Length: 271
Image (cartoon, rainbow, N blue to C red):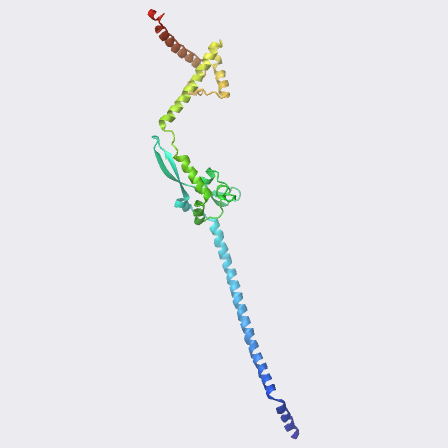
C-alpha cells in the first residue's frame, strides 16, 4: 500500500507543467494531421474532376472544329462580300455595270478535300501576297471554311488590286457592233482579194486553172488569209471558181479601160 502511494506520488511529481503542455501539443498535432490529409484529398478530387471535364469537352471541341473546316455553304456565294464589280457594253456601245461572284468551291480530285477559291485572283494571277507568301485562294485553295475568312480575303491587298485591274479592263471603251461588222467584212474582202491574186498569178504564168485548188492549200499553210473551201454550199477553191474570178476581173478591167479611153484627149472623140 505504501509502495503504491509512492508510485502515484512519483508520477504526480513527474507530471510537471512542462510535461502537460507537451502532451497537449502532441494531441493538437494528432488532431491537425487528419484535417490536412482531408484537405489534400479534397484538392486532389477537385483536380481530378477538372481534368475529367476537360477531357470530356475536348472531343466535342475537336469534332466541332473538324465539322467547321469541312462544311461548305452555297449561301456564302450570295453574300455581298463574295462579289466584285465589272462592266460590259451592249450592241449600241452603252456601258453597264454588273456584280460577279468571285467565290467558288474547290474540290481536290485526289482526296476530295474541299477548299475555298477566288476566281478574280486566279484571273489576274495574284498568286503571291504582299508579304511574299503564297496566296492560297489563287493556288491550292484556302482550307478554313468560314464566312469571316471570306470577308477577310475581300480586304486582302492583292484581292483589292485584282478588283482595280478588273474595273480598269472592263471599263475601257469597247468596239460597237458597226465597227465589229466593218472589221469582219474587211477581213472577208482581204480573203477574196487573195483568191483573185492567185487566179491572176496562174494566168500570168500560163498555168491551168486546175492548179488553183492546190495553190490555195499552199497559200493557206504559209499563213495567207483565204475564204474557206466551201461557204454556204459554194466552193471558192476549184477551177470553176477560178474562172468566175477571172471573168469578173476581166469585166472590171474592161470597164476601167473604156472609161480611160473616153477621157483621153486623143482617142475620146472615137467613143
